[in-house]
Figure 1: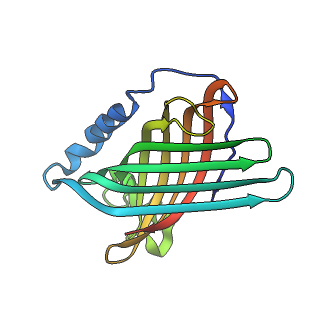
Figure 2: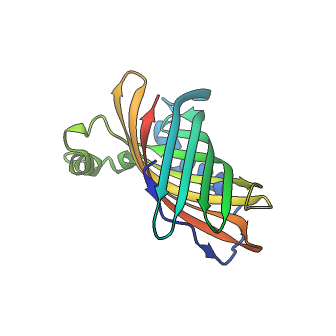
Amino acid sequence: MDGGKPWSLVPLSGGIRYTVPFVLGLLLAVAGPASAQDALLDLLPIKPINLDIAIRKQTFAPKDREIGIQAGFTALRYGDLELRATYQFFSIRTEEFTTDQHSVFLNPRWNNFIDVLDFPKRKPINRVIRHVLFGPLADRAVPYLGAIGGIVLPSSGNDRTGHLVGGQVGVRFPVAHGIAVDFSFQYTQYEIDFREERGLAQQWVFLTGVRF
């Protein structure tokens, strides 16, 4: 995990708890019919497993230290659809305050979503996009879209459980049997209590890591 935009409080919003089931249903409706004959449901394949760590310390204006850890595994897979389970820890230490954030969330993904544009026959749009984005690695790249939905647990600096939602776009490059390099851009917003104020914190993160 390479970094992220500092959180900020925004007004509360509702209607979040059905996000992940809705996204899963949408992905199944879009990707399911095209691959139903070949796809098999794989429960708890576990791999790929991921572990991302970020450590940041700033010694001036302001002085702070940030630590982030994100670990997850694949809970189920069906063709190009997969559901991942993830734990995330994010900590901020400054001279004025300290806050820890523990989160658990589900991460449904649609792999190779570009391939839905497999037309026209002579020059498919998906092949053009792949070559433009990934060049000589076009046939090895696995681009994906993902949704995020879960909860933030009570901890230091946060007294109550809150929801967490977001989305991501990324690409995975297999480099060896069972090993891949992953790049993704992830946005999340999560409900927290901070200095006796309840609100939504926003976070933008660019993630890189090895999946195995």
